[in-house]
Amino acid sequence: MPSLESTRRNEPVDEGSDDEADPELLELLRQSLGLGGGPAKALPPETKVLEGAQYIFDNAIDVALSPASTKGAAESIWRLMQKKAYSTQMWSEHELHPKTKDESTVDFIFIMDLLNFSFWSENDEAHRFAVEYRGKRWTGYWSLVAALQRALDEEIPITDPDFWVNETDCTEELLRHVFRSATDEEIPLFEERVQCLREAGEVLCTEFGGSFANCIDSVDKSAAGLVNLLAENFACFRDETVFHGRRVRLYKRAQILVADLWACFDGEDFGQFHDIDKITMFADYRIPQMLYQLGCLRLSPPLDSHIRQLKPLPPGSTWEIELRGTSIWCVELIKREMEKRHPEVKMGAKKPADQQKDSESTELTFNANNHSKDAEEHTEDSEQPEQPTKTYGINAILIDFFLYDTMKTLEEEHNETIPHHRTRSIWY
Image (cartoon, rainbow, N blue to C red; front, side, top):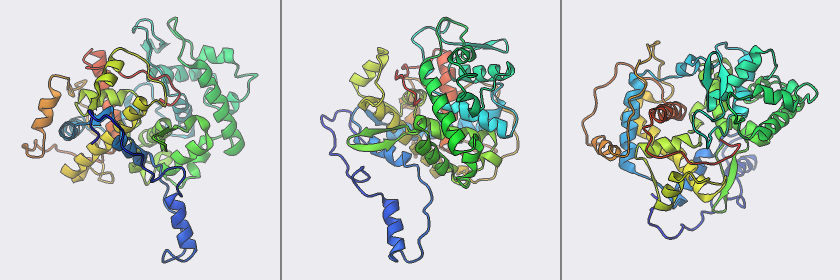
């Protein structure tokens, strides 16, 4: 674990650097030369997000993890997810998410995650960007979903890539109408969102027959393959950066797009992926905030002070990369701890019967005053809690969804112990 008190960085790790041959390519060459013991065959796709996250964690200085708190958090999260029967069904239960299960939903999810970035505001709740829809005012991520649903209700073909590239019909003025705000603040990064629409529409129309469903069909039900396809073909999904001389992949929106398909379609049809467990947590600004709340994430005093003073972190800066990469690795460790203690929750386990969602808004009320105590209570030597009546597959996606929902609830209750970091970026 990197030390917060360390005064110098570890030496850069050469393995996996841009100057070194890709191990997958080397293996294919070995097999083609008869050195692999059999005919050459394609290796399964890998996103390398987790590999990069571990590298970031191993070389971070200002962000570290508490092993005891991480183990304690794993047990507490598992118990609450079991109690609430937390599953892919939660995704469709929200009133704004699509209810149909067809190609039109695939189109909706694509534009939703194409534009799913940077909703935080320096204004207070009453003056931040918000969308009025169905008699409610929506902010954050939900403001985007509401704006898209509102546009469809107004018969604007906002989910059609052919429409995005038609600048005669899909004018900037019309797009400002689509994303109009109930306040004086417009949607952040409006011009960048328009650029994402134009560029992605061009790729879909010229390379994939104008349909994202064709992208899904081309990857043979591989989640990692679809993430890589997005990153390779769509510049606005290519969430990569350089950390200590090594290029690392974070792929927040590419991965959450795959995760939303999986959750919406409940692992079937357009959401069927045989390697969904390769998807990691989605590195944004909410999950690091929640992991700090749980006592898992530890920050150096300068970084802690910087975040508390609401100072911006430039995208691609060392602090920002350490926060994102270490958070991915932390959720992976939480998942592994769950699987170690409760092997029955590994993905592939039998799905539970439909269960009534727990009525309580949240019980994950860790804060700065109690997370250390909770962590100690849930170490390996502690008494195991009563087993729930039902278990089901848990992966990084569901853990991320659960932590995000919980952090939003804690924020609404004004129970957060640290603000989220401020980075204005199209990546999250």
